[in-house]
Length: 346
Image (tube, rainbow, N blue to C red; front, side, top):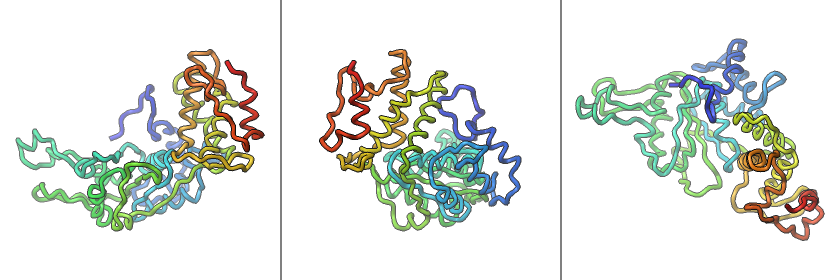
């Protein structure tokens, strides 16, 4: 189920990336564990939120983690909702990795997702040769999670058609998956530890409303954008540095670039600058995840094309031509405008 870790992975899953931390926590954990969990709730919280010995993996309120854990230890599934780029998928990955040791049992929701992909499919060559049999059945991630007592992740569940979503109703209420095609023993009962974490965007196109019946089987938790400027800046700095280190680049991202980037994204996202003046608010989402992506790209461009770690003017000069946005009247004495106006056109 879980592939052996390799030394060359673009993005290792959390259980590989933090394998040493998880092993230490498991060895020292003396607190009571919910049925089927490999760590206690206190250890899971330490792993995600961090402490003096462990690095924080995400920026969010500790109470959110506690409510999520209590939900997953109960008979209700967990639904993380929020704007795109607010680390809902990362949080679900960290929870699954620390609770059951694997975050790879994942269903990706889309308009093309079918009920077979959620429950089970068939090897049609064996199906034609032998008829319906356990050997011909192809279990889904959900099927394997129920058998093994693991957490299954359902990414962007509201991108699935409503009738496909409702295929989860009996599974989440009865903790039972029927395979009527199989003769005899044709029921899969959920083992202790099984549960489901779903994610859904609140501001996005191509989403489908969940039925009231399905909503009742979930506990909803909202993941908000990072409220504190310094926390967001520190997160962007650490994530860009980690991506560069993953590429084998022993460089640090330019602090001035990231300051301009985070400040700009926050002003566009909130519609208010750091001085409190109102500005135009975008209809699309400019998230922390996108700030990390842009900061990483600026650092790569600087390293490979300019021999530096990136310059603020790169953010405003696509194609080598100055495309700096002209400040509005209320913005002309803001720190961002003063920082931009000091840049010398190249």
